[in-house]
Length: 114
Image 1 (cartoon, rainbow, N blue to C red):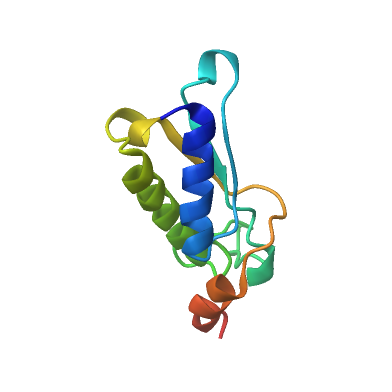
Image 2 (tube, rainbow, N blue to C red):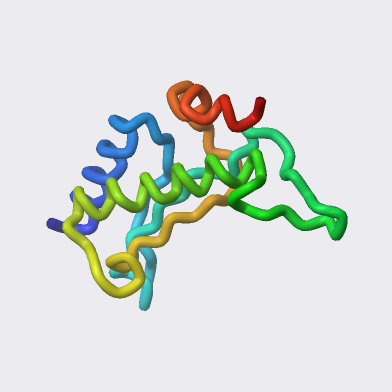
């Protein structure tokens, strides 16, 4: 499978699962890496911070659902590409920037905000 075919297949599988993501391959020495960006989770509101001003990702209303989506995205990409092993098969799932998440994702994790 070429890099372009792999990118299209992963993007289609994520879209079918209801996950909006930007998918591409690295450049230069990172050309073998598959990059998936699921966005920053703005639809889940603000981070829950402790007294020191930090959030605990698995307890935060914004981070917890995004970590679940990140894990699901990695699993889908591994199934589609057959990549496994070192560094999750050289698949990098980022949570950066404003990428619109579909309704399914918001509904799936809506209970986390309540």
